[in-house]
Length: 412
Ligand code: UDP
Image (tube, rainbow, N blue to C red; front, side):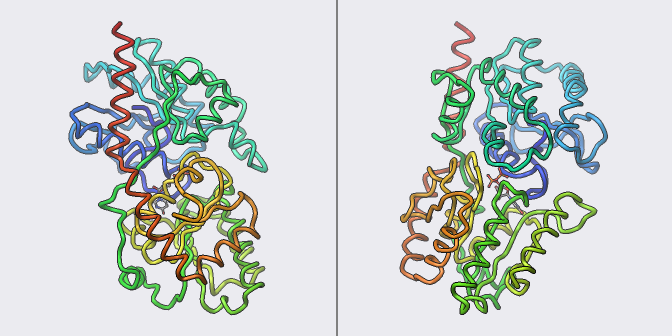
């Protein structure tokens, strides 16, 4: 498995680490438990990490040095892919390994997969997690200046991979319409959630554990602090909510989980938090909004359970694990009608959907869930039931079936 930028053991919620890391970790563990030997190759980012780490039975992470150990912006990771590939091959040779197939995650890995597959003569299965052309449609600016190159690499991967995995019908449509993906080589396999970590917990207990007893109503946001996650839209909608319903100002807390609060950890993200704090200040919401920083998933389960609703205001989302995790904890989601969110959340049954970027609709939907107790109970129940259908085990099963069908074709 190639996951150049997303180490499956990385601390989550910071810049460039989120759903893809979780996906690779959970899938590798599930495949390993089935007796499939999996090595995940990723760029060495944490100085304290050993070169090789176990993920569980039959599954390992192998850190490959390319450039300095530490965070690098994606384009600088790209510039060092040749070095990454060469070091990876050295490692493979040193252990005398041979792989049957390559499963690549994200566009950076697609480029390495192309080089390795040509030398090893093994098929590639590609999953993008996000697509450059989709991101380009919704973003004001292209922060990393990566787009043209990224899109070329994505197009080449769509053309040459033995199979492409899409996380939702919507992503499959985007691949078809924007990248001319061929249906015969595409599989829609939704993501999963770990029910042992994410399950309902009594709200009072969760509030005590997270020291939030003083909040009457809690709105939760979880994710990387980036424009694409719609956090600005959420803050604007909260300002509108308080303007329209001033009585809620003394009752509602918004907890923002994710991101680096300390500039030492990640300066650009901390800058984004500073910008958001100004928005909070302009709307006189200092007493209502708390930037918590990132949390591990065990703690996150407590935050989901403590909340009355989880807001997922993303501008685009290939799947949206946060929504599914909140639902598994029995917390209704108010999300945007984009990507995987609209296939996971059934509007009015397991959450509410609003158009992306529409802060007025978001404020209205949040108000409905907060003030209508019966609706909240109905959605909480629906959310839990809906989440039961999505497990990592089911993802593993479908991925194995895909591997088998791809390998059968190779052998013929
Ligand atoms: N996450 C976490 N701690 C945080 C913030 C996020 O563990 O402080 C995890 C969260 O549980 C989820 C993932 O990061 O599994 C985010 O995935 P999602 O698909 O929602 O967004 P992505 O990062 O892929 O855009």
